[in-house]
Each structure stands twice: as C-alpha cells, then as structure tokens.
Image 1 (cartoon, rainbow, N blue to C red):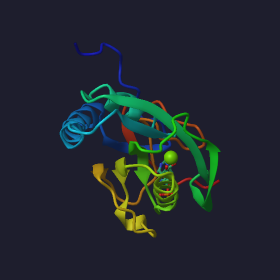
Image 2: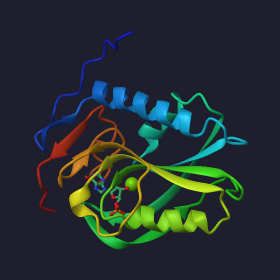
Image 3: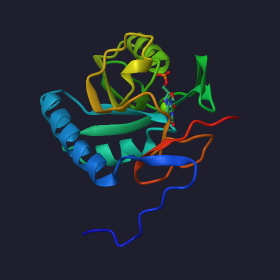
Image 4: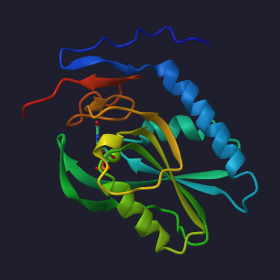
Length: 187
Ligand code: XMP
Ligand code: MG
C-alpha cells in the first residue's frame, strides 16, 4: 500500500533530491536478494553490524528484506565533526554480540575517505571472525584515501555532502525519506 503521507519538501539548504525513496527501496530489494543468496549455506546466523548513527534506517530496511537467519547489532564510531573529517576513529559503543566464529556483515551509510571502514574491518578481523564483509548504501569514489574493499554498494555518488535516510549534517535532515544533496555550508 502506498503511503498517504506527503513527501517532505526540500528546505533552502538542500540543492536537490539525489535518490528518491522508491529508488532506495528497489535497490535495497536487489541487495537483500544478493545477500540472501551469498549467505544461504552458512552455519548459524549472519551478524549484521550497523554503524550508528548514519546506517540505522538502511539497516532497518535491509534486515527486514533478509530471509536468511540473522542477528542485528550496532556499533558507534566517531570520526567526523560537521562535514570535516578529523581523520581519526573513536569507538563510542561496541557490539553486544561476541563476533568470534561468526560471519559478519558491516552496514555503513557511506564510504568517504575509507578511514572508518578500514578501521572497522581490521578491528573485526582481529576478533577471530569467520568472515567480514561490507555493504555501503553510498560510495564516493572520488574521496577514497584508504583502499577499502566493498562487497555490496547501493549507489555511487559524486563528491557532494548528502543528507537524509540516516545521513545528517550536524544532526539535521537525518530522517528525510530520500537522499538529498546539500549546498556547501560555511560554518
Ligand atoms: P570515512 O571518511 O571514514 O567516512 O570513509 C565515513 C563517514 O563519514 C560520514 N560522511 C558523511 N555523512 N553525508 C553525511 O551525512 C556525507 O556526504 C558524508 N560523507 C561522509 C559518515 O558518517 C560516514 O560514516
Ligand atoms: Mg557514519
């Protein structure tokens, strides 16, 4: 059933809708199908680790499309203030699950420089996991400085600041149902 709620209009600080809600939903279906297939024969549940806060909506939508046994967990990291990278990663909250002996899929909102995922992949591999794979909703290839291997990518986008569907600018716009491009901000 289609939602009867109005789609929130773009505010003055947003340049355009980059990816609308239907397109995100259709792509999430495709990604879920691929993941269902790839992990069809593993022993035990797949551990999904959503990286807070940016991936909470993508994680919620993706996990509800999975038919394989899975456990949802989260981790909180911090490496950004506003739209400028501070370059270092801080672990704010660890997973509840013990990852040893488990297949782990990290769910990230966006791959920018690669600092966050590079840190997380190495950290998780050191926990004697059976496998560590990554899915990102968005990838900004122009910004990569760490060669991070991605297993699943939702959309490749240009080097612009995006908000909505979990992504924010200083906590603004996080719950927009679409992904929008922001005008460059002067703080
Ligand atoms: P790195 O550089 O570690 O960055 O790959 C990943 C994290 O940076 C944040 N990020 C963004 N957040 N709009 C956002 O709301 C963006 O355009 C954007 N680019 C990077 C995000 O938290 C991501 O996890
Ligand atoms: Mg993030």
